[in-house]
Image (cartoon, rainbow, N blue to C red; front, side):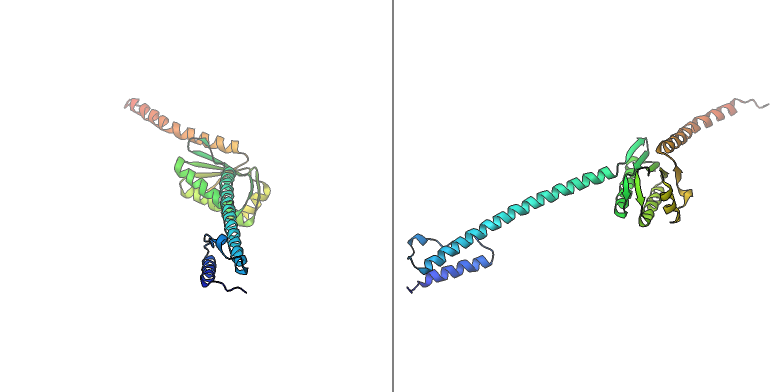
Length: 224
């Protein structure tokens, strides 16, 4: 075997040490001028290995960026779906309606509660209508979440009305100590909206009626 110059051996060992540390950029140079011996085959193989490692890293980085991009898109789509699953509608000044569609899981009930409370504060809402007409089955664990939503709405000073309860939903709520005195239940959302608007109309008319009554009192003669 032809003796190999120590400098070549040292250089190969140095390159391999850098590779272990994750540096794939270095290469064994001037191989065209190197002696055509068995060690040259090793040197060429080391460079080829470094090329492959670098390409693999680049492909991995590209795949990682693609995965991150896809994950970001999925998060955005999830957020959009969550918004669609909690469609809080302003049906009248200071009156909100939440049509609940599909099954109510505990996590979804928590998201709905947070969204409703935020809108109550933003809209200074006085009434919230929870329409359960298109809701799926309420699991026993979820019933507590719905009741907590009702209580949270009341703590913010708004009145909660529930419409569209099915017999199964009603039984589930009753088994969880549902206090009917804290909430108004009606067959349909139209009924709740009519009740709320009628109540608001009467409240608006009361000051005018009181003012008219006081005016009539002042017009009365002392003899009367």
